[in-house]
Image (tube, rainbow, N blue to C red; front, top):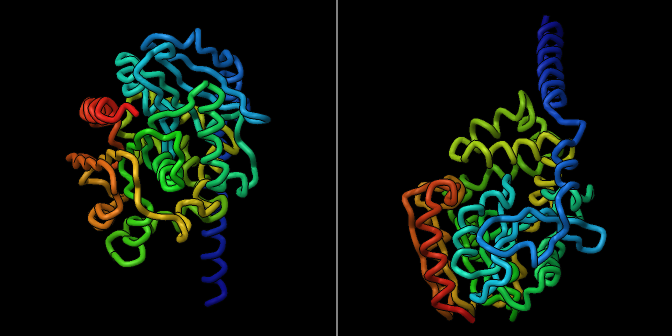
Length: 334
């Protein structure tokens, strides 16, 4: 009797797994229409990227090719690079790109490694932090930025913090949305039960194949209903088109699997360039403990803005963020 019950339970589990796997596989775009559309984009040209209107371009870096949103070339106020997070693309920055370009800044927001179809290596090792940070400087070189203001959100903030802590002389100011100083974040995870609970989703993300299968199941319903309800329809559609392609979600999740969100203990934690930090007090991922700890790590100008918002700040607070960023950059032109 017990064996019959066990076999029945096993059969139910296997059947459920098979249904989910088949439902995920049926949701994928094996024609790779997103990749085909990117292949039709022009290569980057500064002359064709003037004005506040956003241009979509391809930027080649060695064997890799990044999809990017660019605007404002020819502007005299300075250069800005924007780094998106998971699971988004440069589309998240569209309102800020237009605002910065209108104010005279040259702006580049590129779809980072794994998100650009032409820069999607399969090995987890290819998503190590040294490669992610190198991509930023390679993009800067490709578009002619000697120095630049750096802005990031979510994983883009993780990359930005590492660059800032390595004290690159090319970075004029740093703006982080949602993610606090990485050492403060690490201390909070180590000692604060609330932050440990908020960060527990990472354990799910690093497991092999299961997260992408669940995210993809039923026409990416989990992404559509849980992650993207605050996103504008056109931006959400871009994300869904990207992640319908086989391998795209795995590449994005490989940022987590590479274990790159951390800092070298030998690195000086003090930040010596002007920093703007914007956080939503309803953020389900980041609690207040890390914010309190990070305030001891800045020797230059540090501005903290708390918003009544969640994690997706650009989707709900674009105007407020735009004003704060413009003020920050104008106060510290370099």
